[in-house]
Image (tube, rainbow, N blue to C red; front, side, top):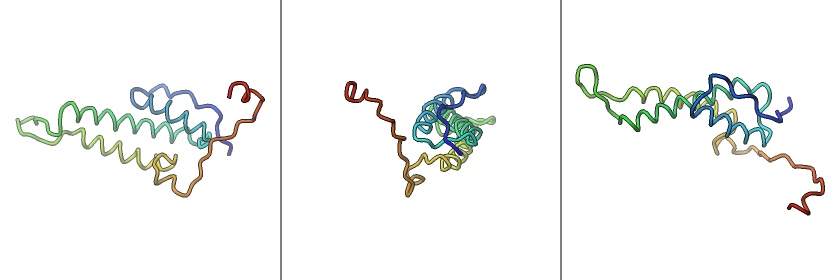
Length: 124
């Protein structure tokens, strides 16, 4: 299967951190020829997991590690559970796209070479 040449349109339900991740990381993965048409749903799920993880992190940063419970007791911020869920999905899927240094060990990812059209000597 051939790598895609252009990133897919952003899914309609993608927002916030996931939208930024989809565009930024997707563009880089397209440029090195990693994404194929079969990766569309998995990559969208990866961006969604990233959004969940980062929104939960914002909540933890804003509210703190502990919050007041319904009975005035102090309890762990529920966003930790959401963060862990998002992080687990993100890390499991990120391995498929070589997003961590450990995932890239033993794999050579090279940027495709661009044919020289003569402009290099003038605009180089």
